[in-house]
Image (cartoon, rainbow, N blue to C red; front, top):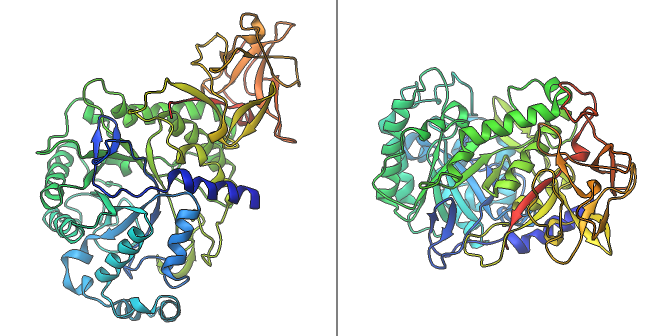
Amino acid sequence: MATNYLVVFLLLQIVAFCSSSPLSTNSRWIVDDASGKRVKLACVNWASHLEPMIAEGLEKKPINEIIKKISETGFNCVRFTWATYMFTRPDYGNLKVSESLDKYNLSAAKAGIAKNNPQFLEMTVVELHKAVVSELGKNKVMVVLDNHVSRPTWCCAGNDGNGFFGDAYFDPSEWLQGLAAVATTYKGFPEVVGMSMRNELRGGRQNVPDWYKYMQEGANTIHAQSPDFLVIVSGLYTDTNLGYLRSKPFAVNFTNKLVFEAHWYTFGIPAKSWTAQTNNLCATVTKRARDNYFFLTTAANNSFPVFISEFGIDESGERVAESRYITCFLAAVAENDVDWALWTLQGSYILRQGKVNLEEAFGVLDINWDHPRNTTFLSRLQIVQQMNQDFTSKKPTYYKMFHPLSGQCVQIVKNETVLANCKDASRWDQHQDGGPIKLAEGAGCLGVAGDGAAPRVSSDCSSNGSKWKIVSSSGLHLAAQDGKGEYLCLEVNASDSKLVTKKCLCVADNLTNLRTCADNPQPQWFKLVPANV
């Protein structure tokens, strides 16, 4: 575990960048205005929108310790939440931190803040929100401000009154007032690089015409108050669908500031589907992501950045289905090299859904905010924390062979294939299905040596043993024929993490995909990830 933590800590050297100038967009990329170079957001969510309206964890640790942990675990950005009423209703926003805690009889949390962050107790909740943002900036962490709800509460039920325009707590006029207030409040805060307009639009009222009407008004409102900010636009159906943008563009009175966001969880999918149909289900959800939002990054004439502003799993690692989902997710996100924000930083909540000091299993930190909950999971994020593609690069595109189950990449060391940090990955030429996988630097192609044997690297690029086919619906199995004409798949051996070739899992001998399969095929999943940096 210590080794994994060290690996993640070293990633700080790659991703810890806080822009000192505003950010804009250039086609599908977020760029620094001053340099014109790409900036990649590798964020973690930090909640401040629940009933007390206080950033979670301030009762557990001094704020500088919390922010240090954000950087040490490889994040360069925080998606920091807020509730509309904090900025539109004085009886909410003018509450002092101590008063807000007293309102809910949160004596232990009040004592914890008095011990760890006493400077905050007599601030209003809005002043505290600003203070946390300022501290993030001092520590070179970028901030995206996320309007999570209107009335402070846990999110997100379809009938909680916070879901869509016209719901009980979601008055469009008050929402616009809140966006204007926050944009004005944080104008001149260089660490604030953008505003996310609303989290997870949902519920029975949602419809496309109102989405265009109000979201376009909201975007123009933010830009009018703080033209330097990125304006981050969420979609319908809990932020999973922006497909309607194929037929009607998003019309605003500014350019080069729009980013579209999406959420990708496995919620709503039965766990048994992941354990019985892993290849097929990964293919289905990846296509859904491509159809619903990733298409925005590939449009020929009008592409935009896509920000996966929430994803995550129970980091205890005990849920098999979630473990399979996140492996599928990492393959897709690495391939597309999009910006993202993990849910979530907090290991606990001061008050959530009536429960005090509730543990957050999705949290990066443990319930006491002492240590990362799961350093192995964090180490799997290394390739998506790195910037793999830079549109300003003059270097030719090459490919890293990524193993999403381990989070590592294939490296050739003295003609042996091993797994290593993706920063040190070997470089490969583009692979055409049914063709060789060739090293980009120097001669040599990957080939099958036999069942259970390590794959070889040799000058042989033409025999059947060097011609690799994609053989499952997931698009993540690579198979070539051995000397007997049987197909073997590239695999990471669980016992020693070495690369071997073995009989393909969940794939029939005729290379058809098995509809159901009790095996876990993910040790055999590999993705060739484009890079040019």
